[in-house]
Length: 395
Figure 1: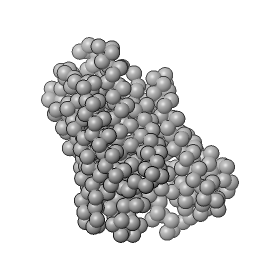
Figure 2: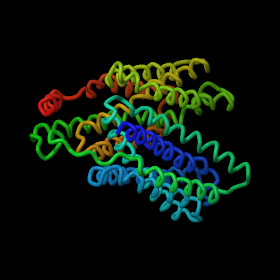
Figure 3: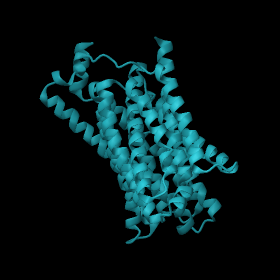
Figure 4: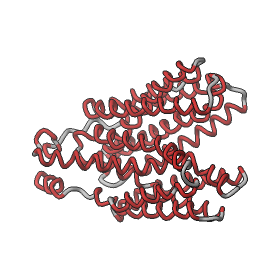
């Protein structure tokens, strides 16, 4: 049993790397596909909204299917779907075909994202200790692998179709080959059966899930803003050379990856509330330094603190959503992830809109407010007294 559990954890890492790699391969090919289809940067922004809409829909479908069929059945199929549809944007020659391709690819990505997170919750429950953050760290590793593979493909003269087609083939094989080690659907304990719960307890769980979703929206809005505006901040506000400005995102991303590798041990020792509270507080300090500092070195330090602070927040929120009701783990994770994904897409747009009324660096103070709100609301991660008492009576 212990060997099977270790194997299930390993293949969960594989699926997280796969998801990060597939999404990263698309990102690497964006300039070439944009030029091939003949669209402007502004039009590309609209097409990326279609990608997000497809992902949101996929998350909702994937969550419900994971609850009904079990993540073991859904994850490999979602992996195949996400992999196979990766090549579609490279085959598009017209704007409308690109839009349709991104909608379908986004759906596959969202389905894989939620189903693998639902399985990660199942693995974490079996381990009876925090393991979620490490899974999210390997998603970032997948993005790094995609960047390296994309650069190598360009170096040998491969076009988008050959590159994404090869990645799609590798992805399909990986998704199918890893399926056997996934955990079977867990039998539902009577205490976890939503149909047997009092109406008041069900309402309390639902309210808690939506509060977790709102916090995910705030945190992932901060992540989205960092993804798109960190480099521009150093370049346009602090007049940093392009080579130096690139380090803004680099320090942020590196700190986030390192933080996620450490967050599970931190959560095991101090609890998820501490990870969210002090992590969000650290992120607030970091982004405030970015907003107010006139020095490049201080801004880079601020971006690093921002990434380190945010690193453990989303894994804690996803984990709490999955454990709130094991019988509906997929659905609950899809709600939290879905609203969080909206925040990720909205972050760059919100900051962009605010630059019409104030300087770019000053817009980051809104992120300070969001991080402070997450820190103040971290107590939501504590198990409800009613839930704890129910578990004790049935154990």
